[in-house]
Length: 94
Image (cartoon, rainbow, N blue to C red):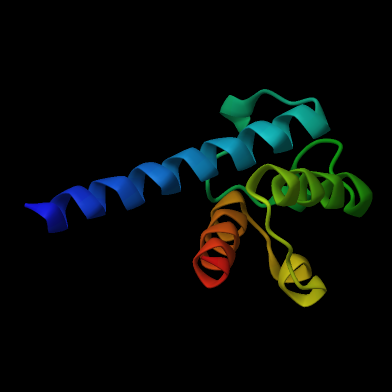
């Protein structure tokens, strides 16, 4: 049973981070969060440019107290990839 609880906790954290990534992206770009799925290509969203997307990343770094390498940031194309980056960074800093 403890194994199952651990898996539920991890997936809840994953969903929470993904929701935060989507919310921060929507806020920065002025779009409805419903328009952003985990596989949406960030650069294709209305109003998206490198400066605005870097602001999203900076906000996510502040929210989760993580810091990403530049090459990792520039490789991110979707909210799922940014979520995975947050979770991987949080694990290495734990």
